[in-house]
Amino acid sequence: MNHRLPAFILSFILFPLLLCAQWDDKDQLSTAFHQQRRAALRELLPPKSCAVFFANPVRNRSNDVDFQYSQNPNFYYLTGYTEPNALILIFKEPRNIDGNQVNEILFVQERNAKEEIWTGQRLGVDGAKKLLGINAVYNGKDFNEFGIDFSKFEKIFVGFPEFPNQEKNDNADLADLVNQFRFKTAQQSAAVDSSRLQRFMAELREVKQAEELILIQKAIDISIAGFTEMIKIIKPGMTEYQAQAIVEFYMKKYGSEYQGYGSIAGGGKNSCVLHYTFNRKELVATDMLLADMGAEYHGYTADITRTVPVDGNFSTEERAIYQLVLDAQNAGFNACRPGNIFSATQIAAKEVIAKGLMKLGIITKPEDVTIYFMHGTSHYLGLDVHDAGTYGSLKPGTIITVEPGIYIPSGSACDPKWWNIGVRIEDDVLITEEGFKVLSIALPREIDALELLMKQTGELEPVFK
Image 1 (cartoon, rainbow, N blue to C red):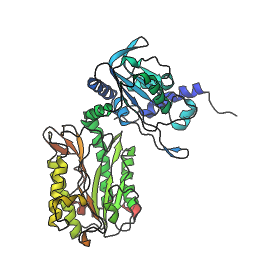
Image 2: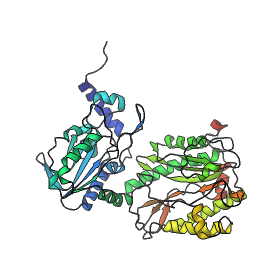
Image 3: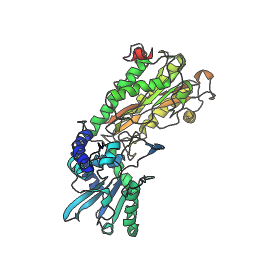
Image 4: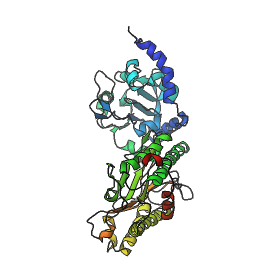
């Protein structure tokens, strides 16, 4: 007996489910937010120009397994669309399309009942019109024959995806959309600009809107919950991956869709590896654990680092290095003032660490500070963990990290008592009109507060006995 339903019936059944599935969360960015962001981009575009954005490629993990799909942040920022194989054109001035004056056109992947059984429901044209607030929406397969004359534009700003996916038996996958666009604009090569669009988007995304601040704070609060429990529970005999698992459990418990980046949980010598993500070592009593993790919530990510002694008590050497990094972070906070240059936090933190390392006898001259503090103190934070921004003066509404660190691997040119101590303290900071606000301030940073927290019993303590 054949239990398969005809495609048109499946489509009829699945479409209402699609709307529920896409919008189960009631705190998504609003349609009005995306519309306003497209309008803001339009203000930056010169006359007689258009901006072209492609969705992110689908990325293959291995064989027939793909990574969970993650949208191009610029595409998501402007549309709210979370599916692959899509293209949006945003016009400076309205254009006559099919007898209508429109200032934007969205091409989306077509509804396909058979495919949706395997990979989930798609918005399609009708869903995109209803939920995204874009009136001119077409299937991707329509783009090839679509009657838009790119010769009418003096400038065509475009961001091309790297290695767009090519799918068998699909003439509207991302590779096809890119190739069709290149063919349509081949005679206007002088008008095509593939560099300035990122600058426009950096200017827009650098300063967060009110809706974005709510989601970023949610991501931070989720991360704090995970860190708090991990710090309570961690002890000798546990592993780096168990520390990671505790934080990531709370990310999922409180609604995070992803980790914002690969979780770092490095103990002992691994604390001195800046982007260590293997997380397989067993932790011993003499280890410091450097944990750098962040939840992603509705596209926006937190970025927090805490470093704690696995046995619950800072040794004399650990205390000295940790306090120095903490002092440097506080100096970085004080540099978080609107109008300051972006590197102000780096300058302030670096000066504190250089003086402190000289006082401890670890270095002999200030310029050697980069041997043990070799990375920047700050980066923008938002839809990307290293978010888009202009790196000009600090502006109210901007969110940055402040994350100084000291890393002294085994074999360093200093007293061996300092070897294998790696410390980073990282918090997320909002630049305000008056100064700054530390959004992750609820997670303890001070030595005494951390030691006190490590003496408390964690919710998951029985799991790791």
